[in-house]
Image 1: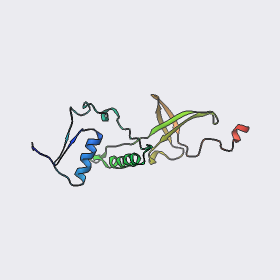
Image 2: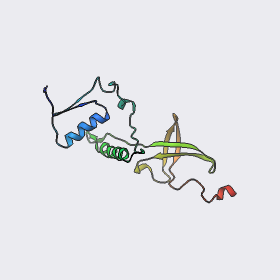
Image 3: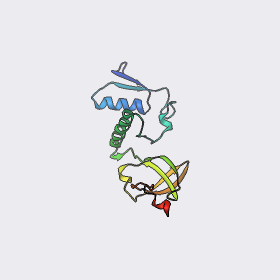
Image 4: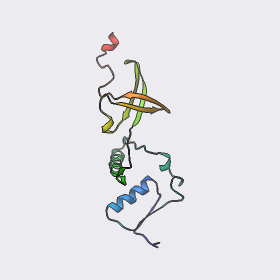
Length: 147
């Protein structure tokens, strides 16, 4: 084992491993990542948030960083197989009284966001069938309200 490194990164969560991966892509060598315990039991938050990458944030910088991360994760392969499968997430949901059905607003990857696509969402621990709709579901002319 080497007794020195060009850079030592403390924390083997998504940020630490991401920084190490990025540095090695830039050509850095002798990069060491340290953590306080075995992976998935190290005490950080990464192991408690499997697969979720929120790409919306009030900060433009954080939104851009998350989008960049998704691009990078999408490139990951092991033995010729993809390692990252973005599936989207629900941002809010409620009953739409003017349309008479439940509505969930969500982020979906382009391959699943075709209008009319059938998807399954989980909301408050329950799975629900859903259909993607790109058109606004509200009634701005209030035609439905007038009967």
